[in-house]
Length: 151
Length: 140
Image (cartoon, rainbow over all chains, first blue to last red; front, side):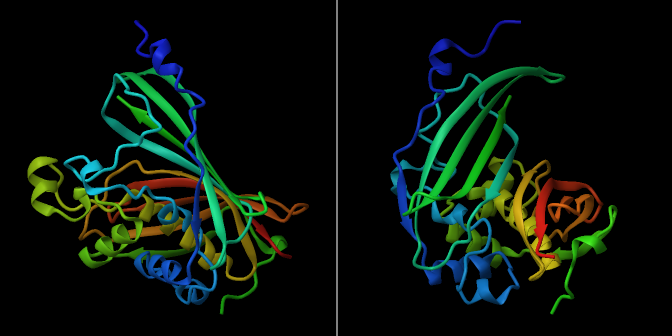
C-alpha cells in the first residue's frame, strides 16, 4: 500500500507553539465548575481549580474571521493532512500540582508524532500533541497528550 | 461528607458511585462559552441536524471527560488524589440523553497506596461513550 505521509508532512513532527502564559482567576474557575455541574464546594467557590480547568484556560482565543464556517478554530500546529475525517481520539492527562486562583501558568504544545496504520476500514493517520503546563517556578503542573485519528 | 477510603479496604471489582447527568441547552451553551468553543454542533440545532446530519445538538467531548474526573473525585472525597487519567470519546452523545458516569477498581498496590480504575460515561442503552482508565493515590 502506498504511503500517505510525505517527508514534508512528517517534517512537522517536533513543531512547537509559542509558550502561552495565562492567569487563573477565581471567577473563571467558578464559571467552569458551574458549567460542568461540579458539586465540590471549593471548586464552586473558586478556591481551587478542578481537574481539566486547563482546557478552558488554554483554549485558543482567535478573531471571528479566523474561525471556519462551522465555528472551529484551525490548529496552526498541524500540517495539511491527506486524510480529513476525524475519528475518536484519546487523551492522557497527568496531574502533578494543584492549581489555585492567582497562579500564572504557561502552556507549550508540541506536535510529538505523526504516523500511519492500516485498519480494517483502510488507511489511518494518527498524530499526537503534547501540552506541557508549567508554573512560574518552571515546575510541571499538568502534562496532557492528545492522540487523534484521521481517516 | 464521604466516609474515609483507605487502601487496605479497597477491593478489585468494587464499583464507585455512579452519577447521572442530563445536560440541557443551557448547560451546553455555558460550557462551550467558558471554553470559548464556537463549534456550531453544540448550539446551532438547524446546522447540526441539516448540514452535519446529527440527530441533535452534540455534547462536547471534553465535558464527558470532565464527568469521568467528577465521578473519581466524588468517590475519593478527601481520601486521596487523582494522579492521571486516560480516556477517549467513542460515541457521540446528544442533548436529551441521560449519561451515567462511574467506574470500577481494577488493581490495587498497597505499598504505594495507588489504585487503577476503569471509568466510563455510558448512555441509557448501556453503550460506553467515553471509556478510560485512571490512577489514584489514597492518603492512608
